[in-house]
Image (cartoon, rainbow, N blue to C red; front, top):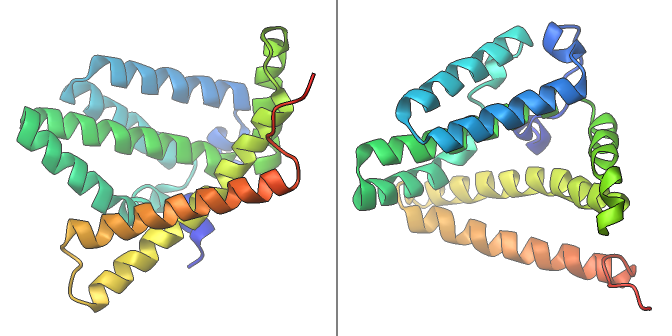
Length: 206
């Protein structure tokens, strides 16, 4: 299965979620995510999880709901253990649950909106901020790079997990997390070098 399938490449459809305007879907996801994070309570996390599941069901994508967890679980496990050790079980559940729900909600947007439409919408959203010095085209480029990078990083995590499993280290957080971080930093450096070589992202000279 390709990395983009794990990420959530656009799935064509005619469901109400697919047909809903991008602005409506994006606003709903952002507001619901902010409300859940602000509440910082297991009940709010549970409610957000139910709403997210209903969104996937409404889009006819129930089978896609838990797919990212196959790749996210090492990071969630490390974070959950740390939160449990430092703040208790309910904080661990809330923090890891909120991250999971927000990631799944954002993925639903990717599943139901074609990437070109998503990028155009993001650029249009930033365009009014030109008066404050914002660069909509550069923002669109950054978003495009992010969408391109995530499949690579998820695929990298899958490769590391498979390698660790082959060595009998699939339960070792260090064996799973450290190589992923190293690969992510290397990928970011390579991407930055490629952009710099094309003169992209350099500050403009007066």
